[in-house]
Structures are given as C-alpha cells and as structure tokens.
Length: 129
Image (cartoon, rainbow, N blue to C red):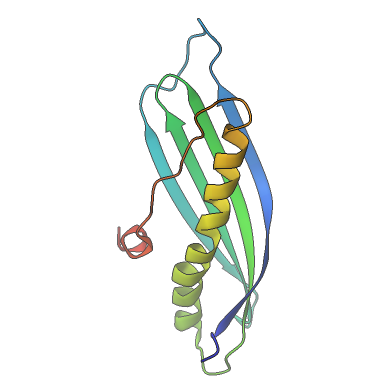
C-alpha cells in the first residue's frame, strides 16, 4: 500500500551547542527536553513542510538546540486538508525524529565521551498535549 505522503528530504536550519567550561557559571539548571513541531503547506495542500525544533539540556553541562525542515509531498488525491495536516504532523514528525537524534548524538560525541541522547518520543502524546 502506497503512503499518501512522500518524504523528499530534510535540511538543517539551525544548530546551537553550548558546552560549559570548567569553572564557568551556567544558566543550564536542569535536564530538559522540549520537541516542538510547526507545519506549513502550499495553498493547495499538496506540498508540506514539517519544522522540528528540539531543545535538549544536560544539567550544569550542555545545551543543544536543533531545527530541521522536512519536505513532503501529498501524493494521494483523496487526502483533504485536515487529513494532510494530521498525516504530516504524525508521520512527518516520526520520519524526522531519527535524523534529529542522530545529529544530536553525533555532534555531542565529538567533544565528549558521553553523547547527548535524545529521549524516545511518543508522537501521539506530543500532539495530544
């Protein structure tokens, strides 16, 4: 069965990475994880963009912010605007999460033996809250 959306690729929009130096004061006061999703469509809802922003803090040590843009095409003529929004929100975010996890782990492992690992995310709960 063919999927009603097709993933065209992604682009890194923004990366911020702060690592506390020894003796440096930091504003990172707790462990924190905050994924945010924004959806954008063209006027006929046939092309969509999922913008995934992830903030991940490790108490007293590191802060990471990543923003990815995922590009999608709605391939089914039977999908209306509300269905397109739901498909992109759930499926698009699910597709982008492993890329975000990999980027965060890879970059933070370059200067530390401990990579920051993004927690597992229940996408349905993310959109129900």
